[in-house]
Image (cartoon, rainbow, N blue to C red; front, top):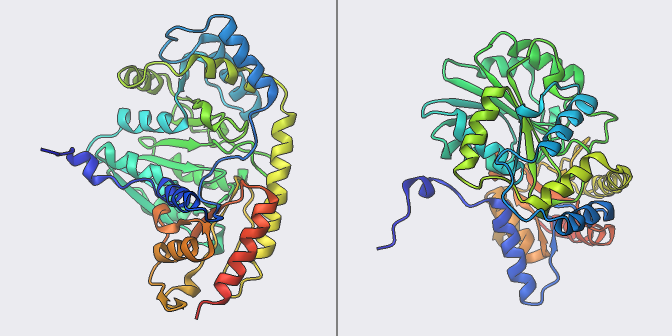
Length: 397
């Protein structure tokens, strides 16, 4: 008898993975699909990082590592936090995991009980809701629209905090919107958070190095939040190392110990070769990262310029990551060549099937009025995608 757990039945499959799979199916049929669904740099991992991984193989890093990560890597992460982010996490407060996604799962499963609430600005990354649900807790969204660059205010945060609130979880730069909280905006949120010492803060900073605003700011560096902030990061986005699966966090010691205990029963330590590569990424030449960031900035400007020409589509200018999250409400309730567009889900599907451009429905990110597209693709493909999208949306009636 085929019977999966109730836990699994409550979960939806990742919308980004679903759309990527649909794209692959169409490509397998010989169709020229341009995939803007996955958030993955199209660059190769820099050569000096690959060389470190090759050395690690030759040097014999073939055996189980410590669950929380190699001591020298944890020390390097501690130094990175201190010098780049103004964060004081000792090496013992650092846990290395199989990607930032596992880091976040460790946190949710280690800290949440049934009935707890996690306050999350919406739009939010798709896996936040799934992981919170898996932990038996409830996501409490705080909606922010395109008119505010998808960033919440201190007043909204205050109104969302209740007796069951356990964690405030947010990302900056943000997936799916690319929004970046300035230091002054973080300080406004912190002014509220200081009044609720029982509330833990999880700051997802995986897109830290893809930031066009001038400087990244970590909420954990603000006074009055000591021993309450868990900072999540990793090497996937800033170093084009998505396939290496290496994330990390800095946290209060008791949280780090709890997450290490949880991880010890799931995966144990992260891949040894990826850890040695990550050490090189964090301590080596940053020039490839800077070049990638400038390429992403140019692609952002290209796509914002092109999509802004589509009548009815609202597009803001995100300051980080590699996503656009245009508001497409104006097209809902209309039709494309007789196909009714009743929701953003259907819009994303019809756009894929008719124009061969793969995006992701905003509903998966907690927003029923937008779609997400990644501009982590070549300029040639982005220009082709923009041509197709302009034609597609002009034919909606």
